[in-house]
Image: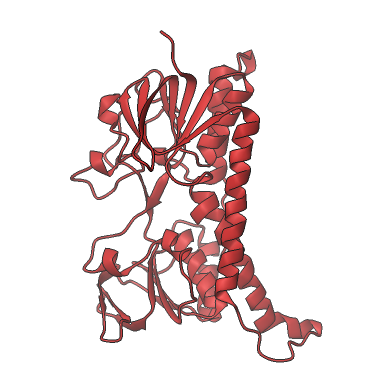
Amino acid sequence: MGYDFDLIVVGGGSGGIACAKRAAKYGQKVMCIERARLGGTCVNVGCVPKKVMWSAAQISDILKHDMKHYGFSAGGDVTLNFPRLKKARDDYVKRLNLIYAKGFEDSGVSNVFGDCTFVDANTVRVTDAGGKVVNYSGEKIVIATGGRPHFPPGEGVEEHCISSDGFFDLEELPSVAVVVGAGYIAVELAGVLNSLGSETHLVVRKAKALREFDPLISDGLDVEMAKAGINIHRNTNGVAKVTKDSQGKKIVTLHSGDVIYGVDVVLMAAGRVPNTEDLCTECEWAPNTEKLHLENCGVKVDPRRYIVVDEYQNTNVENIFALGDVCGKVELTPMAIASGRRLADRLFSGKPEFINAKVSYEYVPTVVFSH
């Protein structure tokens, strides 16, 4: 049977792009389907713009605390033009989107934008922004649809809060910000907001942030965040509700009974989930496969709706593979890239040394961009 493509990659994030380009390098006819912007979470609303903001916060800290020790003086108050920073950051991300598109063009990878749904194990249906529907068939299909921020339950939480994605939509620096979460995303964004000049509150369910890290790291960070001026609300068991006062400010009520008044922005960083909510009607967690209709191709998901794969990224369907955050293993950009390349090496290189190629999920380092 003839197929339109040797490989169809669903998801144009870091892992999907790496897999598609490596497969094309081996002479395969490849298509990549993406419903938003090329680059996925990392490039658009994750690592890359976060590092721009971290750099701005670092400069702010130097101007406030360090430059005088090296003989510099500002000659007056130094102010932040937040809209200008945002525009420069967003323009940089747009350039990266174009670079990824050019990379596809140079590699011979076809790129289609739209929502993707499985018709069967070898066929997907893509609906573009204008409503045009086209079916494509592929001998092999890779699912690399990533994840998204998770809003925990609570009165007014989804209505009055933003996620880490929403952080990058902010047009002005908030005067008062509440960040909810104890992981590296919460720590990083709380640090950025505090260093840039927001009154910042960090709400953690238990005693401290980064509880899963070595105590030397988490305890040291805890001391430094408090020293930097971040208000840490401990042992709260999370947010009970978020309401608005008569001036439009948020009121954040915690399960511990603490209340934070006069808040401009409440940022929920309580974890990420894969995209599969249509398959998870009775499950709080939902990965990035909600429109894929995996029931049409038979791919299995676990109770939290992550796609089940083995150590070689194989799903239970012979010609369908999955990688990156949608599998719920090590959810880091370099791991998605590595797994995408190793998978393409194994499937398409034809080289004996790659017959058992796979990525190692052991001893993976990570970096927290805290302040």
